[in-house]
Length: 527
Image 1 (tube, rainbow, N blue to C red):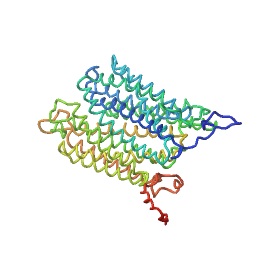
Image 2: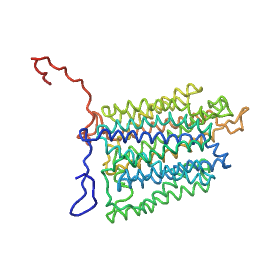
Image 3: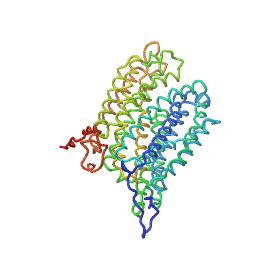
């Protein structure tokens, strides 16, 4: 028997798959998944990495204002957040490979047409469809969790976190170079072959998940209510700074989103009382490590977006406003991309180290240390006055982010049952992106509020140095709060892991083999 569920039957219940062990897992296939996911990370980050610095060009090409062009970002985020719980649940029910294949094809189609957008409305629609790309990594991480034995999951997860740093290193300079020299459309055109190729590789070379429950009915009404609620909140948060926090549009989207949570909660209770499985398992979300991971990554996402959004603008604005652009009013997109590279290099280096050490040391020491290091990096950025200082201090931020990202996610993926991994990682993706949706507008509000009001540059709308300082101080405080939340998690790795996880194996510490005894010499006695 293959170990794959065959459907519900009173005579023959579904067979529970056996988790992979060091002796039974297919190393070549597991590494294949890791490499494929790494390539997907790089390509997606290449596509998204060039977009933010290209927004002014897109705005001029289509003749729209700042509020309109920001819909390109918020539409993508709203669609991704709304679809994440639905897609994650579908992966748990029908198979993560099948759902991931459909997602990759949809993402490839959206990317293929975005660069040919004839008008702004078409581009916003294409970008909204492209938001399905936010569901790729939760599905991929779930497949990776199933194929690696528990001992190697932290290492695989850490290496995948390092790929985000590599994605930064490759995507920002390369994407910025193409955008600056050939235009934003060619960035999309150049990505089409790679996205299509990756979609084909997913279809041809990935095996279907062993954890499937096709007998479970999909809660489509609950999914629609939850998706609408999340989309309304994300649009309001991401557009509030542009539309105005008290504007009718912002309040309408926020009110509609919050209001939809009420019928969603009632419908989920009714659905569950009928003996069916709701779109979101609230009991799973209440699991301590799941709740801690979601809270931490929401807070970290908020703080990180506040700081990184401000840092990118600081690279753009002139020296007179506390920025680092000595050639203002001209702005070199490529230079801005290169100035983020030190942060990405630090992410790569530290994430690789954490991936090999977290099994023995434990999640919480690295995660708490990461929050402290990141907060220190943000504080140092607030004190920076020159470009070399900023480049140096951003490496501290990159190291801290890597410590956090490569460690804390293990609290979730080593706690949740593999059959619910799609839903768990998808909901974590929702929380992370909601935090990011709050962070960017906070930074934008600070930069729009604290302007230069005296001297020759008054009235130009330039943010003062104080605006950047406040952004970094806020990000530092928020990140320390994340470190405090980590304390409440239950350790899953290392010598101090919680008794609840004590029976589960971890990667053994390597020891040197004893010397081979000479002929006639007695064997060494352990003790």
